Length: 398
Image (cartoon, rainbow, N blue to C red; front, side):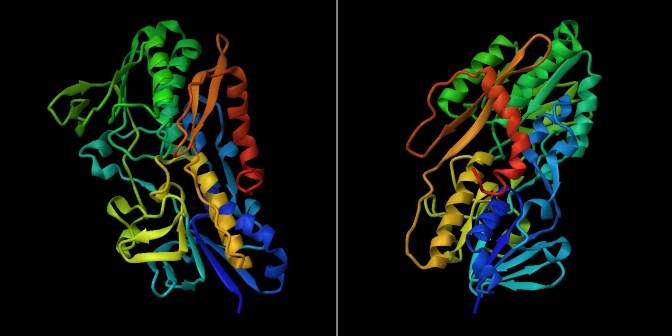
């Protein structure tokens, strides 16, 4: 009997796990002793981290998309469309059912489906919703708005945590300032007020928050921390706080709340918000229906890590893949996820007047982020990452 590994989600985490296992067990797969299957409702991989750059023309849709069959090993059984869209998960019976009605059994299950935007949870938001977070199309639409905005107040609103990549709103804001100031021209920037509404006290870990605050002050970007949103009044173009405060805007850019995949809540395996609960070190399922050592969850859809970042998903995928390798080899060795997380910081973009500054900030559960300074080299490395992503990170080669 072959051992079956079933992976839900073919994004960064799921693809990396599948590719690492396929490389390790290429002989066993050929002999029929190991079977790796990956499910996803979409057959195109979209690199969401690049959405932040799209409104400013720094990446194109072609840079951020790739057919999934080009980046997933041919040794993996990749199933897309309705046959890959998860509808229910039965951990007790080790069975996953998809939209077409087909079901899949497994010996080991990896949940790496990410999360989804929840625009409707904010009253009034859908009536004036502009964002770079949800799709390439939305990011392109926002780019058109930014390119023609000449005067008034831009409000960048994050209603609540958690969100994927919590550093992205700040990065976008810095790039927006630079775009208006150096690409559109100083006169445009003088006529535009930028207001950053943030739902908690700090923008990232203390060292990240310190430098972000400094950059915002230098660029004349207003920050309102601990802003508790009640609703968006699109008719009057106002953001309404829970305390009744009303903040006017001419252009509202919102990072919407996020939640886990509905199928998991419907199956009773998720906690509030639709998140999949796991042990913070082993990434094995520890939830409302019991403990399942053969089930791993990782990335944006799980409770692993302190925040949801692509760097975190990358490290988690390597841990999950290695523990599955050890399980299938039967050697009993366990490796632990130590909370490796990270978030790129952008201090300046490359323009005729600036040369770009960035830093890939990283930290762990027991190792706080150390003070850092963004550099030109950091900017070049960060930009390069989006091109090598397809052949390195998705294939678990770094």
